[in-house]
Structure formats: structure tokens, C-alpha cells
Image (cartoon, rainbow over all chains, first blue to last red; front, side, top):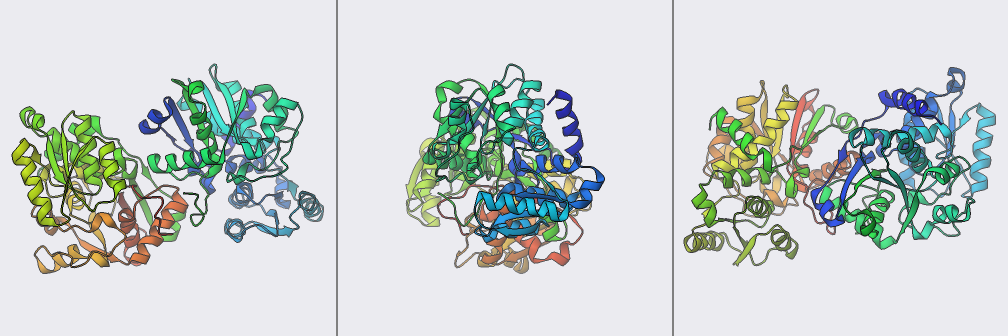
Length: 311
Length: 311
């Protein structure tokens, strides 16, 4: 992916997504002993950066393909993002979800106009069902993180952050399927100024950490983390980009995630989801490493169930 | 108070307070069937608009008086605001608090550098203790809402809102002691463009509603509301300003407050305290009245105990 691809992607999606603000907090800077700029994608449409990638992926389809719709499998933010992006662009969205997905998530997808197709709660069933929908309807499959147009879209959040703060020393982002960190790493590569990219993930699902060590895509045997957006594994597109452009992964405990989340809620008065707190937790965990630096954090989203808070 | 007094006040406090952003949400506008601009004083220093009035009151003291410190009685946001404003200006702050005040509030005041003096939990004891401190130390008493310099300071939030949205039809603010609504009403009078001012308060503490009806300052026999910032009664300065410039009070139920608060948390991803939610609850309660208008709401603060949420 070239510099111009990202610039054109940013221009393409701009009418359909929010330009989110960048926040900073004197109190949190004092606690972290450094300077942190939070790119608030929790304020993005539908509450997460995924709106960017979903929008770009649909916009890159021909008119003929758009008429046939799009399909994905996700029970998280990408399901909502693709539904809303499709609705905004008058395209039909088929969302394959495990029958076991929480009602609140199904309702959210329906609320954004997505058509839910339920399947057995296995990765095989999800893939097979999505494929079947594609064959039956002609809808184009869009992967939540591994699609190159999705990766480019996710990178635009960091492009905007670097426009406002061109001299960041490091950008820290949570890692799940790798769409955000791959897009961010490309944005930093083309638009950063001697800036590093660090991924953050829970110890409980440290597949990205292990993948970068072993040189092949690792998976998680268990996924006992509060950061429910980070349970997925890397893909064939996201992983090589990470191998080339990511400078390291910091792992954090569940307790550190909750502490970081609570600090941001209490001090900044903004609602961020656990997956987003993982990045700030990483900064707090390795204070010495980040001391007196200019740090950017992509706050990935703010979709939490207020009835199930960890505080 | 004249137009120039407010303009000078704004200039005076600007270096010591944040210029907070104004947020709007397509989703909430759809739900409310109107257009609402939220002035986010939850992002103000120490998390509430009270920082403005406290800062102005201290800045208006002579150097001699500043050297002797300031004193107030409050167990809420003003206690923290006066402590932090005093600390920023290198002035000593004495905060009279009832011995029954929650530890979390005492700790917050201490955290901002305030000196706590405990007293019996009665209005008489609060006044007497504050007076005693004043006599002993020479500290100037600053009332949390009825002080004219405090009122002017609180009005600057609405001045900034009107700078960004000059054609608001109505500004809705919560009413407790009346400092915010009095300052807001003056700001709207001098800087608004055919704009009305509506107060919002819980049915459970509807003293302002009754005061405007009876023509004298009424009090509350009980204060069973979640909006803990609104339990106080109007003052000899705030009430006459309200009589002259406020167009009405809307009362809301406790359930409506919680619903409005949850909507803002879930849809806007910002943390607002129950007292702030009262204003949006009023807009939702009287939808017909506010339909297709441009409405400003001062989000008064975001200080909540995350361990005691009403959801």
C-alpha cells in the first residue's frame, strides 16, 4: 500500500465518518509521567474506528457489486460498522453472527439496518455461512480486519492524529485481528516523523506477541479477557505488515486493563471500552520506556454494556 | 451586572480554565426530535463548571485578601473547585464540610489541596464554622452560588456556547443554588439572539419552581434525588436575577433523570453526572415544546462515583 492510497482513502471516506477530536489530560499525563494524546474514536459513528474501514471497503466496490450487497461475520463492532456504513451508502448488509451472541449485540446490528443470519458458534460455521450467503446473493465478503481496504480505512484515524500532532514519538494501539495496528503502522510509516508503533494486548490473548516472536500466525487456546474486541487472531494481510512496521507488543494483565479504563473514565470523563484501555494500560505498565515522550493512543471505541461494568 | 463585567470576567479567568468543547449527536437529536448542543463542562478542570466561578471570585480579591485565603462551605463540586482554583493561584483554601460527607469527597478536596474543617451536618453549623474560620484567619468567605463574582464566572460557559452557536432558541440548565442559571441568564440577556432560558430541576427538589411561583425563596423539606448537586436552595442574589431573566422551570422525575443520563453515556460516550442529565431530561419530557429548535445545554459536570451507578 502506497502513501497515495492512504491519502485517497482518507478523502474518500471523509464525508461518511466523523473527524474525531484528540484529547489530552494534565492529570493523566502526571500519572503516566509523560504526554499522551488520545484520538477519540469512541466518538466515531457507531462508537468505534471500525466505521472507517467498513466505509472504505464498500466505497471501493463497483456499482454492480454494491447493488448485490456486502456480507461479513462478526459479533462485535465490525458487524455494527458494516451495517451502518452500508445503510449510509444504500447497500444491503448481511451479518453472520453466532446464535449465541448477546441479544444486545444483535439488537445493535438490527438498529443500524443490518440483516442478521445466525449460525453455529464455531469459526467453521461462520466462514461457511458467510460463503453461502455470498454465493446465494452475490454479496461481497468483507473481512473485519484482514481486508486491505479495511486496513487502509483504519489507518486514517492515525493520519488525522499525526496531522494534529506531527511529532509523536510513538503510537500505541490495541491488537486484535490486526486491522487497526496494520493501518496505523502504514500511516506512521508514511506520515510519521521518526515515530514508533507499539501494539498492546492482554496476556490472556497474547497471540500477536507470540506471532511476532515465532514468525507465524499463532492463535489463542483460551480467550478469558475483558477486552472482548481483541480475541481474534492476525490475518494473512495484517501479519506481514506488522512484521515489517511494528516495533513491539506490550502485554497487560486484566487488572491493569480495568485500572486504566477506570482512570480514563474518572479523569477524562469519556467512555472507552476495555479493548481501548489496553493501550493506555501498556503505557502505564512500562512507564520508564515512555517517560517524557509524546505518545499517541487510538481510543478504538466506546461500546460497553453499562449494566456489566468491571468497577 | 453589565455586559462588560461578563466580558472582563471571561478574559480574567481564561488562562486558568479550559475552553470546553461543544458536542452534538445525530442520534440524540433524532431521539429528542430537535437539535441539541451540549457545552461539555464535564471536561472542565476538576470536572465541573464551578471552576469558573471559583477562579473569578479569587481573582477579584486584592493581593492582601488573597494572602489571607478563602473559605467556603460545600461538600460538592464547589469545594473541589475552590480548592483547585486557590491552589492554581497560590491561595490558601479552607473548606467547611459536614463530618458526614463521604470519604471520596473529602479525599477529592484534599487531592486538590484544600484544607478541610469538619462540622456538624446542619446548615447552622456550616455557616457558623465558616464564619469562625473567617474571623480567625481573615480568609474571605465565598458562597458556592450566591456570590456575584461566582455568578459572573458561571455565566462564561454560556458565553462560549453562544460564541459557537449564536442563534440558539433556548438554553436549558439545571438549577440548584441558582449560580449557573443566574450567570447563564445574564449571558443570554447580553449575548443571546432572541434566546430563552429554561431551568430544569427534579420534582423531588422543586424549590426553584415553587419560588418563581410564590415570589419568595422556597426550600425543600426533603431532598430524595439522585441529582445531588441540586439539593440546595436559591439565594438573595441568584433569585432576583432568575425572576427577571428566566422563562420557566421544567421538573423531571428521578426515572427521567436516569434515562437521560444513560442515553448520553451510551450514545455520546461522555460521562455526565445526574445533575447534568436533569437538563436533557427536561428536553425529552417536553418534546413538543422543543421540537425543531436549536437548544443549548450546559453539561454542568462529570463527577460520579463509578461504584454507585444507577443503571
